[in-house]
Amino acid sequence: MQGLLIVFGVLSFLFYLKSIVLYPTIRLIDRLAGSREQQKLANSPWTSRLHCAAGSLSFVFALLHIVDKLDKIMLTPGYISAFLLFLTALSGFLWKYIDEKELISRYWGLFHYLFTVGFFISLVVHIIDKMRIL
Image (cartoon, rainbow, N blue to C red):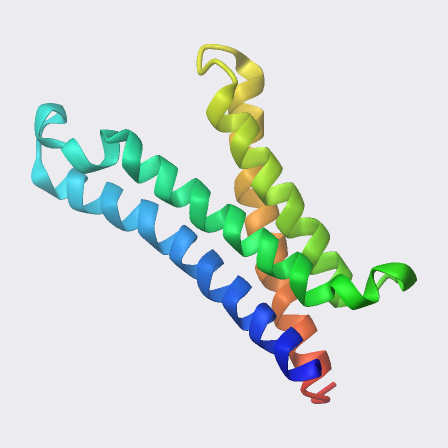
């Protein structure tokens, strides 16, 4: 069972990595392409959907990774990582589906980036903790 939980954790990380690498890479490629009309990939709804789907799958695998420990939630790097991953996914959905003209949309975008950075910091601490380096 422990090996399967580790596999779910690794899958969660890989989907999250795909999520954060996919969208910025496509936006960079489009920016290098030149004019706004030539920027087809970043403006495609599929790019955003793939980014959101990969982030959502990451959260699902993270839940599967901690499912046997949900009855004893503590303030540990693993639970903090899971909570920040949830907040990252939630803020991303709110950022995407709140009208861009509203000021609150920009705040969700800022929170999305901050939660992502916090998630990676807590994830590194979680991995180091589980490897018994600390």
